Image (tube, rainbow, N blue to C red):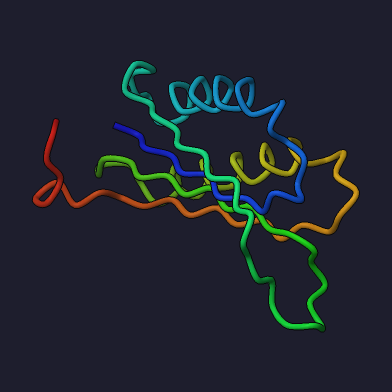
Length: 117
């Protein structure tokens, strides 16, 4: 079930690395949350139009990874997953020449309102 959305400002030059990043991400999910790799889906959104703070912002761009997982994992496991994904996201962008704001959001899906399982 894990559904991953990655939004990033297009001044972060990572498009040539995203296929490998997603394959590794899916493998990480199998390891950490014990999911089936065939249910992992990632959507990637490079954003041409964006605003970062105001003229005093310390960041030139941002990247946000949001993941929806089925309920039943402990908060400790979700925190571990979030920290691993944050580290992986920073590694993905480590050769960027701009200052980047990073965000990871780990959501538990409310299965009462999730259709398609």
